[in-house]
Length: 142
Image (tube, rainbow, N blue to C red; front, side):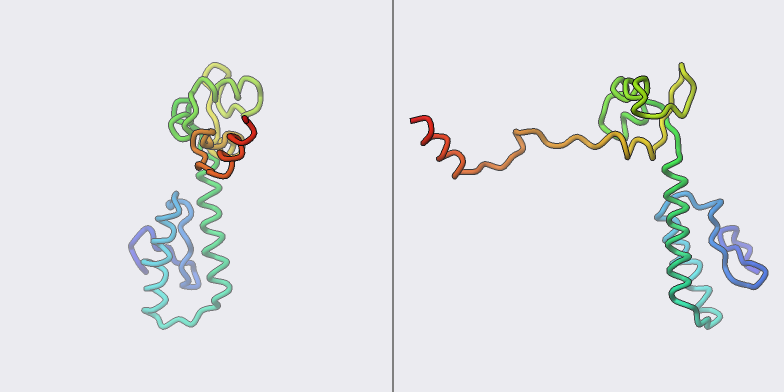
């Protein structure tokens, strides 16, 4: 049996995805590519492709759900979203974002932030120049 803690075989000799130690999608993809695939090649395994795809997708979903459940301070949330900590705190006080911490030490879940707080959109100044609209506006002024 492999002594690498990231390569866990079940009693049937099949590799089990180490969900307890992998916390990000890149590491999960690396595990499938650098641990699981070479092990299959080494034993000349013929595998059920649909089953493997379902296991990969399920492992990535577990990693994503774990990441979205992560809680952070208002300052950390402000850093991630581009909004101020005060604004995020206001959303928590008004009940628009659930408080995952204590009353005087609020925290927010990353999953709640991505649903409630959307990245800022470009304002009017970011619109492209439209010469036809400009010409029409000049014509209306006369």
